[in-house]
Amino acid sequence: MVQSVTPHGFRVGMKLEAVDKKNNTETTCVATVIDVLGDRVLIHFDGWDSIYDYWSDPSSPFLHPVGWCQENGKPLSPPNGMHLPRFLGLTVF
Image (cartoon, rainbow, N blue to C red; front, side, top):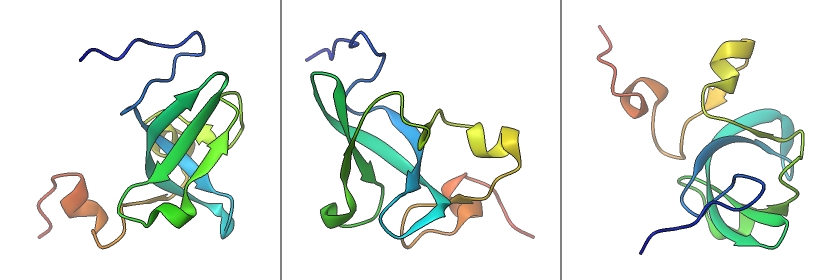
């Protein structure tokens, strides 16, 4: 099944970097859009339980494209239980 792109550009399965608004607005995590309903998107933090999911407006300042943290010198929290080098497929010496 092909997912159509919504007018705001978000689609189910899309990866992004999202701020953890419930626990720490300084923490940006790897996340996935798991649902789209009209002009709202449901954000899921990869590796975390669904109790941390939240609905958001697509224009929210808490949602960023993949690579935003690196481009802006901000730390990116990998999915729960993963270390960032392994998550990125890097070999650590």
